Length: 122
Image (cartoon, rainbow, N blue to C red; front, top):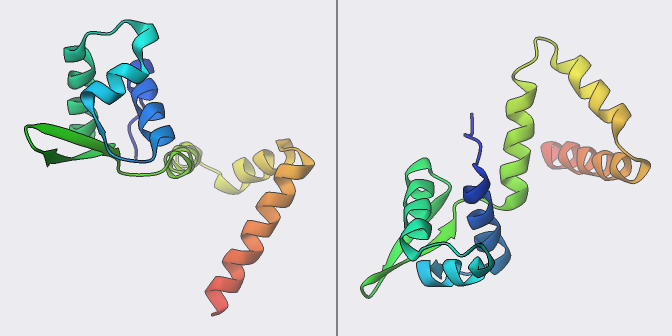
């Protein structure tokens, strides 16, 4: 099960996901400047996210550079799978979910399932 993100952790992850390249603490703090966070607060959040397995870091001189371990989509997909594990009837939950999505979303799901079946056959 993936742990959920707190509000500030989520904001930091959004910066990293949107950036697409490894970021130093000062880069993340700069992107969150409207929040007026202390540099040390951002550093603490990034350290916590590293320990939780959401980000990886690598040395760059005296600083660390941080990047997501997973994509935003991968994170959300894992949250959805975790939510499914909370039910005693996965089939019923999936059916209810499928009935609640828009027509466009249903088409995306249908295409993804068709590709998954094709990949299994190959």
